[in-house]
Length: 147
Image (tube, rainbow, N blue to C red; front, side, top):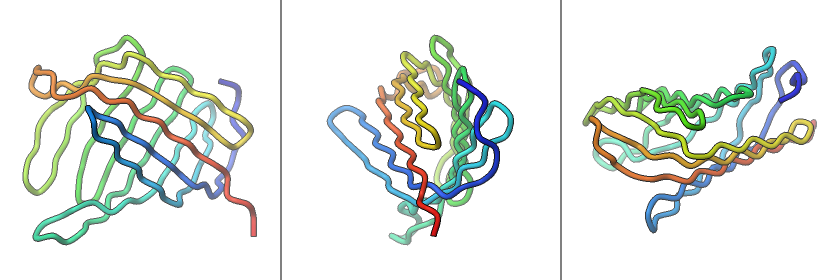
């Protein structure tokens, strides 16, 4: 990955997550911030919360040459790291449950075109050492036109 253009800019984020036969799509407006060799993408999403209310979850995705890290705050707290061929520790906490987890990343592909980015990765998720699910994620980030 080459030196990223420094500074902040608005982006649109599309995240598609596939697990088993299920497919989940999140679309959100966000902000990209370049710092050195890393690119940080921040966006908010609404998730089901207590008693049918939705809660806001702030997501920060740190993208580096060798991997990425997803940090979530708000109604859900979690941290997951992804590097090909690595089993990396993380955690998940919500008002209902909390557990430690491990991600085993099988594939990670990062394609950058100017300020647009396409990232795809596949991983096995382990909870308490047991395989919990296999995921395939694709993330597209497009720079928002300046108004």
